[in-house]
Length: 174
Image (cartoon, rainbow, N blue to C red; front, top):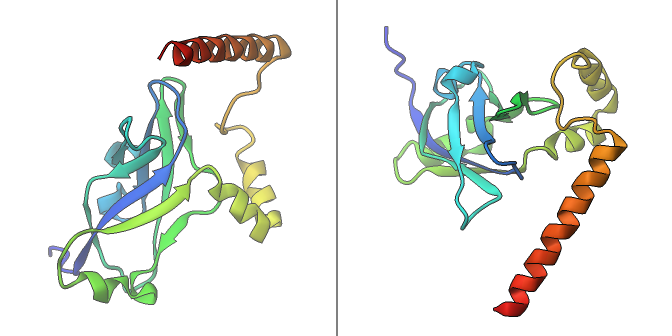
């Protein structure tokens, strides 16, 4: 039988500073959010006008009276797939009143999640022991960022200084 639960339109939004070739996607427990599979993700897009903000298209999500719909942001790119650290994010439509607000139709509700890399830090402040356990389980897996040797750090700092010099010179010419 087809799922006949009411749906609500959502537009997800987060802030993420990315590198060239990287993209932000959203993956969650519900089928509309990919069923925890990156292949079925909800892509987010950005543009020069709104960067570093990333936004999804409108996504119809089935309302779940059993509890919250959980999800995470994922960074994809040439270096691999990196899942947001920390606890899952959760939307509880019935607790928040969003279900009643959206069932009547209208524009999509915007879910503004702020800086998704900061989310793990917020969770750390509320539950440090659980975060330590989560990090221990992920120790062999992918984490945000890479460990760079001191020579690489110095090279990157020099490159940044050179680019700042070029930018300053260009601003003086304008």
